[in-house]
Length: 359
Figure 1 (spheres, rainbow, N blue to C red):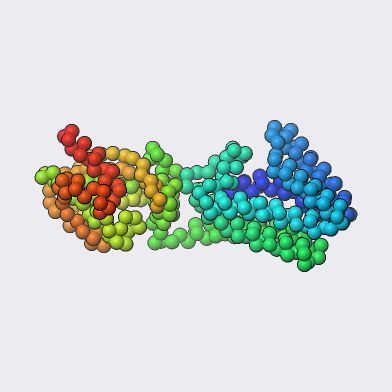
Figure 2 (figure 1 turned 60 degrees about the horizontal axis):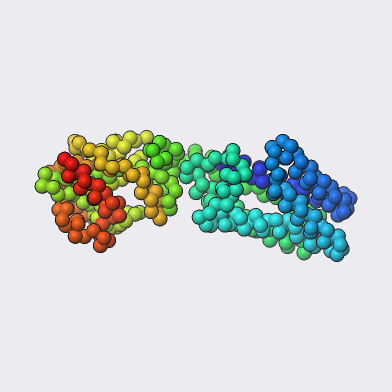
């Protein structure tokens, strides 16, 4: 778990303290005394936060109010089961928010942190990693909630008090330790076969890094790619047919050259490398064509597109490309919208034609 997630937990935890205070006092005195002390503690927390931070902490307020409601019912009916289920009820609410944030496109915890805790700022791409952690937390907290319910009905009051209180700290402590040592192990033993790519903002400034698999797991992680259009003196354009094993748009006709920018590479270096790897071409003089953001359900790309003059027939890399040939623009025009071209290529063709008309 990274520092942003840890800070979020630290800021949510104070709202749960009244129940822990109740458990402690109830253990040594009585339910009524525990309820009174916990309410006084909750009100004190509210006053402290208000005076120090000039805001009303609704989370602490709702937790204390729920404590009063269920505690009052429990005392009035002389049945402590209502009160013993209170931590489970809070956890169910937390699980609902956690589950919705982890398994949907709306990260409620992120929205909450931005509105309520403005000092928490997640770097680009980090929200996806946070959602992965939240999925683990969701199942962990759901199992913990079921354990509280079971202990409320079938175990002693002492065991229920331990599970509802101290065990939560132990559980999160073990979770944080596991996250920490897992991250440390990955850092010391990186997978040599993992392909890393830089993450960028819309101006091309590097903001972080991610694996190729991660950036192809949905939109959000903006990463740079290069495209090159090779045109001969006859006015024909060379297209490659993407191999069927490609992550995106397999089997479709695409730009002459296309690929990711590697960690530590410039756009120009990536363009030269990819052109040599895919078409065995060196010594060309690419001209910038267009730069744009391209987003699909698979990924988010910052595309740097170029064009270059080249008259020989390229010798394509058969492990990367299934087929390659020169096309006339009239051929391409007849096949636009039929699904044989990548959407990227269709988008860039009109830009390319305008650029050629000016030269």
